[in-house]
Length: 512
Ligand code: GBH
Image (cartoon, rainbow, N blue to C red; front, top):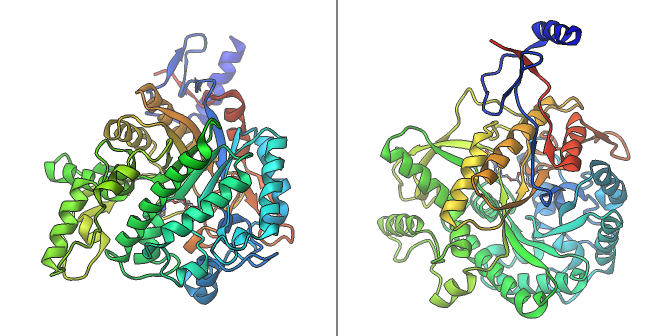
């Protein structure tokens, strides 16, 4: 009785009245509610952390590495990056990788998602010359991971294209698909005996839309044209790599190849049919664009993309659609070319029909024709685009399940930016609420095998430089050895990873 009185007293001082009672249960002894119950993932569920080469490695021109489009772009246009910074040294993980692996071991993760730098391995961009120092670096990293029983999940392409290939048109040149296959074959040959899970591309939507029609490297400003050429060649390249993998490497190795696509949840702004259609159109443009050719029964681009882009191209007097066409053979070839779907999910938007009519200027956004906003009362983060909307995660996963016949999904990114500092209670809450939403989706029948937190460390956040912090570990960029310090969230995530359970929330509320 004494302790329950004590709890009551504490409660009167500290209690936060929560309206979310969906998981609450009554603790009859103390007459208090526990706001969120302990909830567990299946025993075989896997937890990991993620990074990407340009964002963390640094050593941009060390030991034979050549220039990537992000090296070139940040050096040439420092003003375009928010804090005028670049990834030249980043977290210096090239030299500090053993420390990083130690941090992962401290958390207790089962796998590490990282990307390999194409220009570190193949300085000419082509597979005619392999850089031994690059091979040595990734071999040592992978061996270090295995030493601690952490499985590598390797992304082949997280946006750092060799500058040499950019000069030949980059992803708009159809021949790049062959060069990507050569690169992938080198990876399978060199690391295939140590790496069992691969991701061909990270977020083609982002690098095709922002790289060829926005602000990201290489800084192409040809939205609605190069954007689709990029997407087309990425899809061809992905399909070709997968078929090559099947033929030359898969056999009985148990190895798998997937692709990581990002999908923010698109919620209709109102219940009107127009807004509901707008939301579905948005999902198809930002996700179906890549998911439909690979994961749908019919293959090919989503119908709504085909229709809208064909029609708008025609109105703009293009004699052919700006969205390229696959041959029948290509459709069959690309269809089914993945063992799992990597899903990156961060936030939610409200979708409504755009009132801006497409003009003569080709543009991806005008082709989509959807206005995207966010509710002002959704909790803010340190990224303008990222609002905390955990229920969007469950909806995203259910939509993927229903649209693509319940594919095998691995969450390959999810996370949030916070203020610098170690007391990141916002990240703790984000992880707690998004993981509860993920569990709810799994109870709905979504086939999710694992979860990857973005990111292990603070890192170079592309056009936002080092101003956005996504790490479970803080990186002190002013210290010569880029000191890493655990945030509260590192401890919290570790608890979850080790127990496979989300702990009950300690906040008690008085029984009304
Ligand atoms: C991920 O993309 C990336 O894969 C990862 O490298 C990155 O570190 C992580 O996000 C966190 O940012 O500034 O309004 O133009 C997530 C999808 C797409 C979200 C591009 C941000 C830019 C919005 N991203 N988007 S805006």
